[in-house]
Image (cartoon, rainbow, N blue to C red; front, side, top):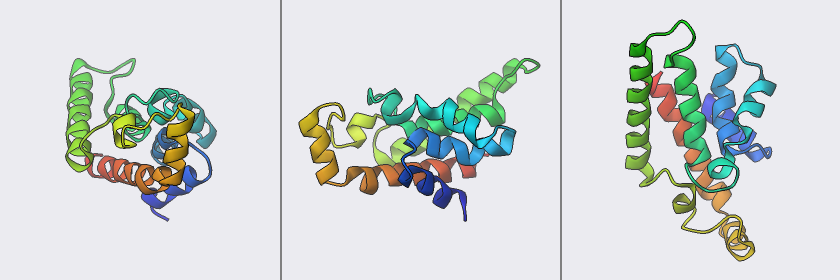
Length: 145
């Protein structure tokens, strides 16, 4: 099973978009599955269901940080490369989906409003749209790393 399929499997098993993207890569960088799921948990649904930056995007950015980021013994060049990769990811994701905003990506519906949440469910946006965002985030990261 490829990373895209594994990420969708996580998502369908009630893990959020950020967890689903981050975990399929994070284990390759020495983190356990449980650590990955915990680290990425708060980023789901646009950061704690606030619908800011899409969780699939934040999960992907965490992966780019693991791959390219400046750590304790890192250099300023590593940080700058990570920023460049981040901008590249944003640009590519926006080219595909038009936005990185969770709310915008969910047709402007407010996940925390009962009526809007019901519309999201009725329109099956979590399956139709969010799974696509997860899949595309994984695909973009694979191409960039």
